[in-house]
Amino acid sequence: MSAVGWRRSLATLLGTSWRADRRGVVLVLVLNVIGQLCWLASMVGIKRLFDAVVDGDRSGVVVAAVLIVGVGQLTYLFGMRQWSASITVTERTAQLLDEELMTIAGGLPGIEHHERPEYADRIALVREDRRRIGFAAYVLGVNVRIWVQLTGTVVLLARLHPVMLLLPVVAVASFVAQTRAQRVTDAATTATAGLTRRRRDLFDLLTAAPAGKEVRVFGLTEELIGRHRRLAEEIDGVMTRAGWRSALLQATGRVVFAAGYIGGIALVLERAVAGAATAGDVALAITLAAAINSQVANAAEEFAYLRRMIGTGRHYVWLLDYAAVAGGRRRSGEPAVAVPAVATSGLSVDRVSFRYPGTDAVVLDSVSFAVPAGTTVAVVGENGSGKTTLAKLLLRMYEPDSGAIRVDGTSVDDFDVGAYRERVCAAFQDYCRFELVLRESVGVGDLARMDDDTAVLGAIHAAGAEDVVAALDGGLGTQLGRAWQGVDLSGGQWQKLAVSRALMRESPLLLVFDEPTAALDPFSEHLLFERVAAPGERSTLLISHRFSTVRMADRIVVLRDGRVAEDGTHDDLLAAAGLYAELYSLQARAYR
Ligand SMILES: Nc1ncnc2c1ncn2[C@@H]1O[C@H](COP(=O)(O)OP(=O)(O)O)[C@@H](O)[C@H]1O
Ligand SMILES: [Mg+2]
Image (cartoon, rainbow, N blue to C red; front, side, top):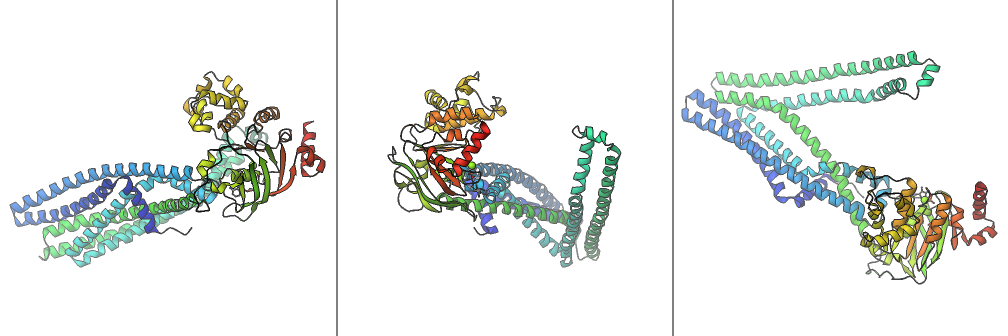
């Protein structure tokens, strides 16, 4: 996808705020502008006041004073209202964003965005920066305000005398010098980061327990302290030099600005003495000249913030685009076919080839095999041979590049993803620890029956996880997870719950086990698979490294580098004396 332009990014950010709180967005923008106009009016008030005083114009003094005070109050009031409106807009935008992000991340049919680093990074970035996105309306309001302020200041200065326009220029020059100065110190800090880390490591080495014995045996104390000191001296040298350069730059900036400031005011004073300018002009010049420095700095800071926000917005827009493409990718335009209530012939994988999107490696290469209804097929193969990928394709986390996965002859592409998913279940090696009440942690495997204790206990029984429940005083009602003042389970116990969860659905078409029992001992795993071995019409795909389990399957598919190397029953494969037979005898020997 192409790079996202800043206009689109900004428009999307504001659009999100707009949908979250229209009135708030308008309020923030309008109040910012009005508030700033009030400030400019108070500047004019100051000029009027001084002129009236000098002219001895009493009513003029009163009008100017009322203007200054009134406008000051209004600025304050608008400022307060603007601030509270900003907070509301920001909160509401953040909530809307959270919902949209959760919808994108959790609602898409595939999981590409979780597994591919460039996608996952973007999600992480947007997640971290979503507060910043929420600030869109506020930041834009502040930027608008600052430009109104700067423009107003420039106009007022120009009206005093065109030469006064040098003041903003001087302010910019001084600001640039300040920024450079900051950069010099930052660069020095970055340059010494490695040394600083080494110095800290040395300190830790000497003061923490692990190295204690060897430090003494080898008499290293003096040496380490010496190294620590030399590093400190080196860091100190770099930082001191940078400090001087930075101070010099800062001083230059200040001198330049002071020269402009004094020159400008001297000019107006000179004109006032000559009768070409009024006392009000002098007061105005002093006030504006003092303000412009911070105005320029402020403008730069807020603009930088706006830019960062637009940067984050780009990731967000990218994500929306991705979701739009990934969300609607059922291949044929045809309406979805109904998922069969019971499978008659079962599942078949037909010449399926697959590469992960954006990569070149062929992970599955024309893989074909069948899992007839009511049977269990085991898939074995070395790490990286494509077993998990195959499982993900069966669960439609990805779509094959070519070939098809069929249920009773219908390509799963033709089913609605949601409807299909309701009829499959799975347990994974990287199972999820749902830190809920135990009943729910298992029950979410079939949301409709989550609170049905009979169903939950049935699944727990099928998974051989009764011992997990029995060990807990609270039974099904036990809160899981330390963070919630609940109990923590062992890896094996969590895994048994994950398997139970996979067994919640009543009549799935397909059950996939992708090494969900690696934390169980071989005996427990064997027992478990004896219980779940494909009853009824479902097809079961079982991925395991344990041949004691694998041999129970009706058929075994051996994957090697993404291809089906062998396919048959345990006895067939042993007789064929190929890869399976070799792996089997290796493991059998290891267990003897
Ligand atoms: N999300 C992914 N993106 C790109 N390549 C992947 C991804 N997941 C797995 N792979 C690659 O696909 C190949 C097969 O992986 P996998 O299916 O996990 O193997 P197995 O489960 O048999 O150990 C490996 O080479 C792996 O590096
Ligand atoms: Mg795997």
